[in-house]
Length: 432
Image (cartoon, rainbow, N blue to C red; front, side, top):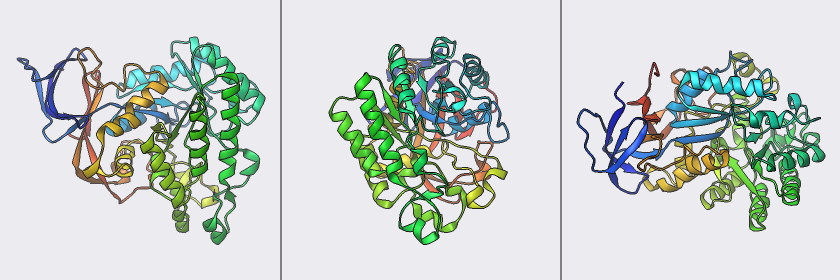
């Protein structure tokens, strides 16, 4: 494999065309370089973005390899333009020990399609009763800095306070799944006019907002960093805006599906639209889009949640919540931020790459191409559209809510330390 590549004529983050010379996995020169014997990649008409970084991916391995594996999940990530993903802790066994997080990191290195940064559990077994081995995971070879019980809220305020104090000692953070469980018991969808019409138990917005308000105060009190996963309501945005104005160490992510889809989809009774937190109202979608553009919401995160057929091909009430996201996230984000015709590519890069890389502490990622930086980037075609066909996705599962939809922007190539994990829109079959 040629380790010298010359990417010709790419529009660098929407700022203008330039050539990028890559040698030995790093950017050697940007401008008008030449290199005898280099592999030339024609990027005319393509936009070069720093490789995308996902703060919220469920890779399911170990334990649910019938839904996804680290290999298939990172192949899907590469196809979506990602060079790094943060793997959530709700595997089987739970990633609450140094041994499990090291196993996940090792599987990621072996796959080779994207860097895999494990997220450790906050509590043992995600049970919310006592702290997991946070220090051991932080000191392990996996270098864990983010901790989350995602799928479960850290609902005990004493445990949340202790966790925030603990991770503060090594500049870590707690990623909170904000859901007061006593307000969502038996909930099936967003509480509102649609749930009343359909007769389905509702998931009230205040169940999210009350936990966010509480944890903002706890983070402010102890000086810790709290990150809110998949926020979904307009009031959550306002609480976070107010917290940031006071200087609280708070960051937040939004998922692509909460930027596009609403609870009206529940009229279909198709479990592919069942997700946690649920799809909200059109007003919430508008507020989240505005907050993402403004920067109150820091990043787009996929909450990529693959499920085996038996967990989705059933009645709504029995279906597990979650949907695929890695291969469609960039398209949905571009659409939410103005569409490919008016896309601010620098803003897209900030929300999908640079900021999530900073939050996760992945210093080699989220970097615009400059001499000496690792060659982690993606080439996208802003003029080309594509139709989502579930059977053609790289994920092992097919539970996408966008089946049959035509989406803007295609990923033409993804490079991880100069190696093409995707080229001409196709995933590389073998990574060396």
